[in-house]
Structures are given as C-alpha cells and as structure tokens.
Image 1 (cartoon, rainbow, N blue to C red):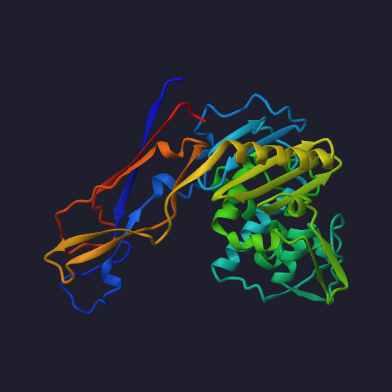
Image 2 (tube, rainbow, N blue to C red):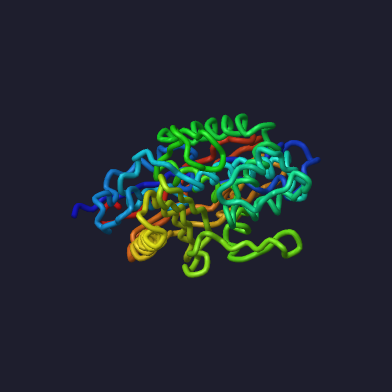
Amino acid sequence: MLKFKNIIFIFIIIIFVFSFINFTYSYDESSLYTWYTSPITEEVTSSDVLEANSNIENNNSLNLESGSAILIEQSTGQVLYSHNMHEQLRPASVTKIMSILLIMEQIDNGALSYSDTISCSETARSMGGSQIWLDPRETLTVDEMLKAICIVSANDCVVAMAEHVAGSEEAFVQMMNDKAKELGMNDTCFKNCHGIDEDGHITSAFDIALMSRELLSKHPDITKYTTIWMDSLRDGKSQLVNTNKLIKTYKGITGLKTGSTSLALYNLSASATRDDLSLIAVIMKAPSTKVRFAEAQKLLDYGFNKFSFKSFGNKDDIIQTVTINKGVKSTVDVILENNAGTLIEKGKESAISQSIEINENIYAPIHKGDKLRSSYFFFRWSRAF
C-alpha cells in the first residue's frame, strides 16, 4: 500500500515564570524549561481523537457475538476496533464508571478524603440489586465505599456517595450528565448513578470508552481498587470478590467495571497494560457472562498482538541544555512536560526518527508560556491503522 509520512510537532514552552534580571530566583526554578508534548499525548476529553481514524476495524472481523464493542488505546484515544460502537444500549452497572470518576475528582481536588466517613440514608439502604446491605446506623469511609463499588458493584454504596457529594442522587446525576457532555459523550443520558434499568438510561460502547479513558488517565489511583480480586469490610464480616473475572486471569489487567441486568444483558469495560501499551476494551449486550469476558479478552489480545507504544521520553526528562543570552543563568535545561509517545503497528518502531531543533538565539527575559521553537518526530509505515 501507499506509504505516507506523519509529522508530529512538539513545542517548547516555559513551565515556570522566570526573571533573568532578578537574582532572587533559585537555581532549580530558573534552570528548567518545558518541552510541551500535547500533539502526541494531549489529554483529550472529547470524542475528537476517538473519531479521527476512518480506517479502524469496524466490520466485526473478530466475529463478536456481543451487540456492540470497541477497543481503544488509552493514552492517544485511538480507536483500534469497533462494532456498532455508537448503538445506544443500557449500560447496567458500567454506569458506575462515571460515578467513580466524579468521586475521584472530588478526592483529587481536596473536597473529599479517603478517610472521610459516609453515612447511609434510607434511600441508599433500599436500593436492592448488588449491595453490601448498608445500615443507616453505620458509617463507612470513602476508602471502604470505593472498595465496595469497584469490587462488588454495590448500589447502596454508590447512592450513599452520590448523596454525600451532591446532596442528593438527582443532583449527582446532573453532575454525571454535565461531565458526559464535557467529555463528548453524545450517545449518553444518565437517569441514575448505579445503572439499574430505567427508561432513557442509555449510553454506547464509544461513550463508555471515553469515560473509562478519562478515569484511568486522570485518576490512575483508581486501579488500587479495580485490581483487587478479594477483600473484606466490617472487620472481615463482609467478603468482597471482584465481579470482573479477568482480574484473576488476564496478564496486565487494570480494571475496570462490569454490569448486567435482564434487559442490558452483559456489559464490561476491561483495561490492561503491557509494555507501556494501555488498552481499553468495551463489550455491551453480550448474550452471557462467559461471552462478555471471552470477547473482551479477544479485543485486548487483538490490540496487544498488533500494536505497540513507542515512547519518545518521560515527564521531566531533560531533553537538552540551551544557552540563554543576557540572562543571570547562561544555560537552562529543557524538560518534557508530559510523557511523549505514539501508537504504532508492531514491527514498525524502528521507522520513527527524531529531530530536535531549538532556537539558538534565546534572550532573557523569558516568561511562562513563551514558545521557543518547534521540533519534529517523523515516522513512516505502510498502512494506516
């Protein structure tokens, strides 16, 4: 097939505000610049990247029995395989990925702590379905609530958390829909925070991939919970066994969430990482739980067998030392702001070449956000994936 060349632009910016005419700045602060890598590893929180490639496998060549499926690479958001990925279906407890995402946002911004205690309302206690039988007279920590939600998909716990975060489940569901809109989840409408069947409570494999990627990329600590196979609560009186059987059997598994009801059938968002390649496979409306896990594994195997992730450098790596004219410091180090890399077909890694070009005439003063020079990575392969 016709070969082509992709050129990835990388920009160098300043991570700190510098003043090279003021001696009060410390050495460390005044000697680091940032190499901005967003064109390669940009944190995309919309559907733009996932829709970008029209040459993905979308003809169900893997002969999946499930009603809908998608496979994406986590860091780039690239779709590697799809089958009816925009079909609106009932998510069941995979809904909880969005609930967990909002909880993790609260923790990371300081509004919530893992040690905070959460009470249980009568509404939460009466949820039914998957639960740990919360009692309104008891409290659990956020840490314990997350265990119950991530491991056994506890409906009572996710409602208790929703009420604690937003004041009511209704207000929390509004937060869920607002976040869905922000992420570009255009196939989605949430009616509750737990996933019990309700008319109009719908999403798609594509949208589940979006929110799974957001959770794993922005809040990687969640894998401390989603990779637990067995645990317990209440001093060992409540045993927890993960509903995601791939946790026990699949190499590199990192999560993420199961869901099933009589109407939704069997759903799963499964994530795994091997050799710096992180994949997310979503299965919806599988006819059985056995098919759900088998087809998620088939998607992940497809991705790991066909693709690899080529790293150009890690966050805070020193790329080069550059000279500053007329500054207090004569040189500064240029560093990577984020991890830099790209997805490539296996066997084509050596086709990538790197060219670094930095302006040699840099004069003080330099301010935060100033662009110094563009740089390029070139790579060539025989077909688009």
